[in-house]
Structures are given as C-alpha cells and as structure tokens.
Length: 378
Image (cartoon, rainbow, N blue to C red; front, side, top):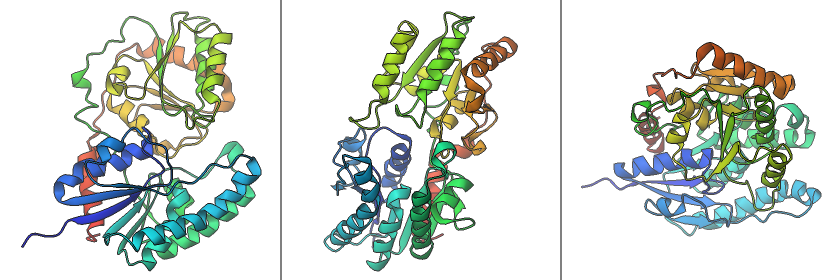
C-alpha cells in the first residue's frame, strides 16, 4: 500500500522573482519528486514570475491584502491585517483538505498563520524569517518593536519550529534562543558553477553588478554614486542592474533613472530584466555591490561567491553571508571611500576570480532536511 503524499501549505508574500520566493520554489521544485504536494497561500493579487511553474506542483490560493493610501492607514493596517489573515486562513483550512505542514516564509504573516494552523490541527507549523532585526534608521520604531514583540510571543507558543536565515533573523522572529539557524536552499550548484562560464572580465574594465528589487532597502542609489566616483579615475567603469520595482506605486526606480541622467551615466549603466541569466551576468562582472540598509542572509551574496565574485557589502548586512569573498564597509564612509577601496582591490588582485567550495549551500541537500521536517521526523 503506497504512502499518501505529504501535503505542505506554503505562505509566501507573492511569486515575484525575489529571494524569499526563490527559497520557496526550490523545495516545491525538488521535493515534488518525493511524493510531496505543495499548495500556496498568497496575500496578494499580483501575478508573479514563478506562478506558472508553481502550478505544476500545486494550487495557488489568494487572500489579497489591499495596500492603504496614506501612511496612517498603512500603520493601522498592520494590526487589522493580522486579524484579516487569521479569519481568511481559518475559513480556508475548514474548506480544504488536511495539510501535514504549514511553512510561513514571511515574518509579517507568521504569527497569525501558525496560530490558526495550531487550532485547525496542522501538526507541523514552521515560522521562517528571512530578515534581521531592523538597523539604522529603521531600528527606533517603537510601535513596530512592540507589535513584533507580541507576534514573537505568539510564534513561540504556536509554532513547532522557528527557522531563520541568521541568528539575528531568528531573534527578530521569535526572540533570543527560540529557534534554529536554517540554511535556505539557496544555490543550484548545477547552474552557479564557474566551470560553465569562462572568466570574461579580464580587459581591465571595472564592471559592477547589483541584483535585487529596486528599493531604498537595497540602496541602488548608493551604488550609482559609487560608479560616479569610480569614473573620475576609471572612466570606462560600468554598472549592471538586475531587478524589478517592489510595487507599481513606488518611485525608487524612476529616481534611480533620474540620477543616472543627472550624472550623465546613461552609457555606463544597463538595466537587465529579472529573467536574465544571472550566473552568466556574474561571470562577466568584477564586483557584486550590496550597500543594503537591511538584509537577512541574501541569496545573491551566496550565489556570487559560488561564482567566485568578490562582494562589497554594507556593514548593516549580517556577516553570516560571508564565505570568504565579502568585504564589509559602513555606508557612513560614503561613496568616495567605497570607490577608492574598489580601485585598491582591483589594483592588488586584478580580475582573476577565487573559487570556493560552496557545497554546504547546495539546494538539494538542504531540501532533504526540509522533507524530514515536513514529515514530522525532526
């Protein structure tokens, strides 16, 4: 008699091509071959990049949360959405087949989802954080600290497992010493394999690359400032930007384009779509820039190191992403300092890449661990 499939309900913010979404797709893609059935709850009506593929593994159900117009409305919606999610998820679980596990891949939705899941009898309830506690200008938001403190108490009581990409992410999700650091199924080493790509960046041109959503948190404007400074001594320096706007209403991308125009960098900056061959783009670059204001453990940092690409990283990013090729610099040092450090690095090391053993981050191995959790064996 064959064993019935393990049924897993994922909760993801959307299916855009981002880090959290890629982390959710790898288990669905790999474990569906192991008699695991995935469905997904999406609190958004945005049709995302990965949706067609995910439908090969299971269904997508929506409980869209409408974006509020004003800052005051958005503030109070944080609390009203908590109860909206609880109500909609309870309704969903009472009208759909029983799930063996729920895996909530966003700190905003974790507390209400694991709370309802426990009441509705889902045996494995995973709350998973991909972002560290806020730093810099975000750290002093008293009401948000208070709200997430309440959520952490709910998660500690209702979740069976708390995962975080870093120790800081675990603490942000559920408080100190209340979960485990769990590697994300981050790197498809059959794709991010430098042996497949010859080192094309050997002509003496400094080629910067950034991969990620166009947003103030990722801080692409800072890299544009760095490029401006680089060109004063290395006029042929370039920047490749790969990503997408976080939402249609955000103006950050337009602000970036205006900066590029104001600094006369149109011939030095290229935008590539989110379905670009990322390993190929990295193989053609000199340095990956990550001047982020806030991150958890960014997938792109690990992918870049798998490709032997050095990184210049904001000191606000967790050092847990460093496998040996990250150089951490405070943003407060400014773009002139960053540019000077980049030039020093290139003058000293040239354009040859250092290749690391990244096997511990292989997505296939990590997904096998996920399977054990989903089946209640851990």
